[in-house]
Length: 112
Image 1 (cartoon, rainbow, N blue to C red):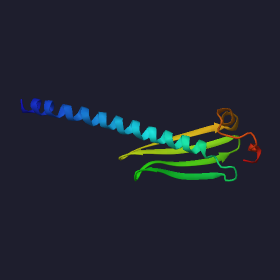
Image 2: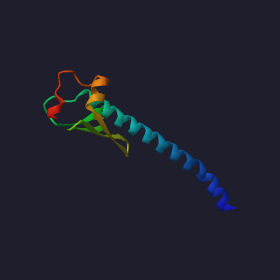
Image 3: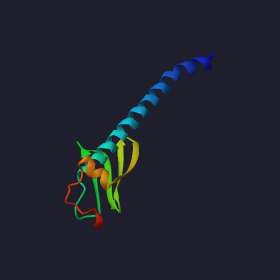
Image 4: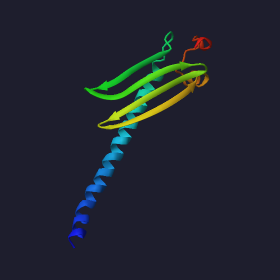
């Protein structure tokens, strides 16, 4: 009888812990997306690599790395929320970046 009462007492705590995990994971993924958008808006003309930390009100939102490769750009963004960390890797071709408006027409991709 005591075991049944103990299980009934702990069940709501387990449900609350799982919803907190999902909320933190979703927030960390959203922060990683913010890092990707930041990197795509700040593609450098002369450098092959850039990295930056996005910080808002003293809290680390994302760590971003952008690397130019032959034929495109690779972005690695790691989003943070509390103790949860989510990493997203993205490769975009130069044609797609130009089509989406992230690259200017006068940029020479052949040298990258």
